[in-house]
Image 1 (cartoon, rainbow, N blue to C red):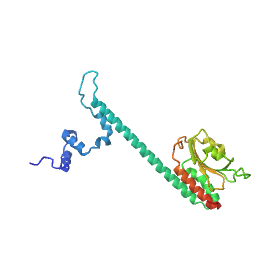
Image 2 (image 1 turned 180 degrees about the horizontal axis):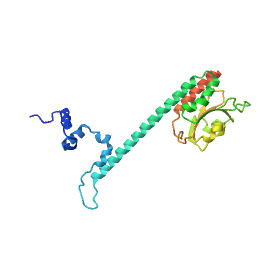
Image 3 (image 1 turned 180 degrees about the vertical axis):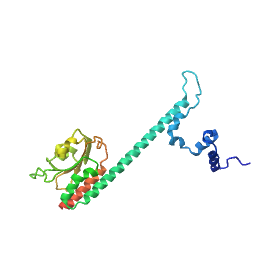
Image 4 (image 1 turned 90 degrees about the horizontal axis):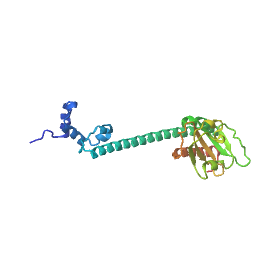
Length: 246
């Protein structure tokens, strides 16, 4: 003899005909069996679970209540962790778009002077920071002041002193930027990213410096791959415009 419910589809149709406030316990049970992730997807329902205590005496722990509470806490923790991962992914995607836009802008330079203008004037908006500068160490008896705005000449050895020997980049929160690096805009800097530039083996080292008034914009432990990519592109453009050896 055939049973009343012969298929999951029939079971669903029968439940749809029942009033929502009169669902039978068996129908709820079948739904949960067919959708085992329902409670995980709806953790706000877990606190509503009220297992009947096995004991009502004093000094007796209801393990069912404890387990349910811990499961609910674990679901909330996992959901929070999931949201953090999604937020980090969205932030990384936004940073990639910013760096790609900056790279395209630099590649559109008509000449070397235009490239410097793009880096020191236009990249701040593209990268969502407050100031971007270029720095280069003084070479021998060369000039101590750059002929272009947004470019600063540093004393010899300053790059290694700021970054550390062979350290490619440094990101950190600061109380104010270095005037040698950021010039008049140093006072508003509350976090900075300083990335090493080495256009050619024979040229003095330099820096690409980004400053933000947001103290959380750059911080220690933050990834530097995108900024290093931008600097490697800038080095190639320098070599191309200035005919420097690789």
